[in-house]
Image (cartoon, rainbow, N blue to C red; front, side, top):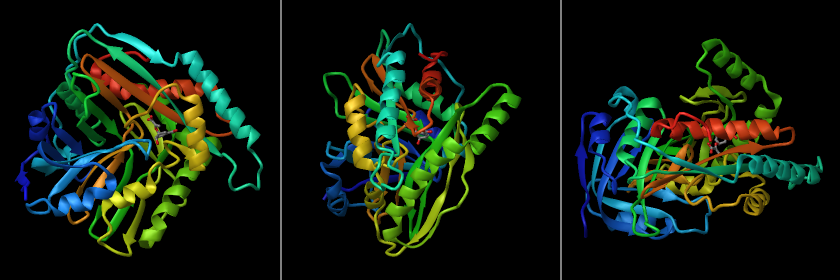
Amino acid sequence: MQTQRAVRTATAAELLDAYRPGGAFLATGAETLLGEGVIARADKAEDIDTVLAATGGTNPVLLGALPFDTSAPPHLVVPETVRSAPALAGAPPPPLRSLPGPWRIDPVPEPAEHVRAVRRALDLLAADAAPADAAALRKVVLARMVRLSGERPVDVAQILRNLARRDPSGHTFALDLPSRGTAPRTLIGASPELLVAKQGGSVRANPLAGSARRSADPTTDQRRAVELLRSEKDRREHAVVVEAVAESLRPYCARLDVPAEPELHRTAAMWHLSTVVTGELADPGTPSHLLARALHPTPAVCGTPTDGARAAIDAIEPFDRGFYTGAVGYTRADGDGAWVIAIRCADVEGDALDVFAGGGIVAGSDPDAELAETSAKLRTLLMAVGVDQTA
Ligand SMILES: C=C(O[C@@H]1C=C(C(=O)O)C=C[C@H]1O)C(=O)O
């Protein structure tokens, strides 16, 4: 039996410093983990418990990513060494340092094409709008991608530190992925959205949906936040997600607390409508990864109902999402763990980064505003790279 080595470290900043490509870094709101080396893998999410049961050590950890497409292979590893530290928020990392350019910027699809894609989604929503029909399409999340191509291997460790610096309360991650060619590949991001966390008998999820761009001007920034909180369209878009998250968690819970009103959540780039759902598990042994799989994909990243929304995404989006809008997380042998939704992220390979952003479309969404919303969401990664513009 292979044994995992666990090392406790004083601060998350030390782990950020120690991260090297090939490792697995994840900062949740509760703790920070850095996995190094690999002693085992789970080829399927169904194998996680068996793989962890066959690993020696004190409550060993598996880290990894689930793709958006639930039929595609996940990437799940049991690191040889896992270093852990308290949450990142208490330990701000070193100053921002932009990556050297120049960057070639290729949007996929072109912005005007994304506007047309949103119109197509609105047509599908309108065609399906039989008010009493529970199966009618109510929300579709459409994404676009921007490829940044540089002239040297992308410095993922610096991007990770920049992400952590700008969004210390985000769930910052960097995870090596199976290479598609010869260059190393890393999924890197700072997600504001907790899919699910489980500790002992307690469960917590933090669905977000409904967004507005932050402004550098405090008055404008506040105005946008207040408008978002009052927006009927955004509240409808948000409610669909909260409903689905509660419905997926309820079968596992003895108690579930679902606040009736959303609150505001802020990242460096965005305002969001946010609801913190908390509960007590009927069986405290329910593993976090089982809950993550029961929830994924939520309507925050896919739509409602799931099958119809997924079909619309397949028909409209011109790329494979891969791990974008999947989940990144960890789980321990005792089932405790946390999974975040893989958004505000990039798939880095060699000299290039594919940066993704999407938004929920419901009846009443404005195609130009949706394009602007994706541009604003792209900023989380673009700013961390040092590209100070929206493509
Ligand atoms: C899909 C993304 O974000 C999701 C969509 C949101 C929305 O439509 O308002 C808000 C937060 C996320 O749940 C993304 O950032 O790419």
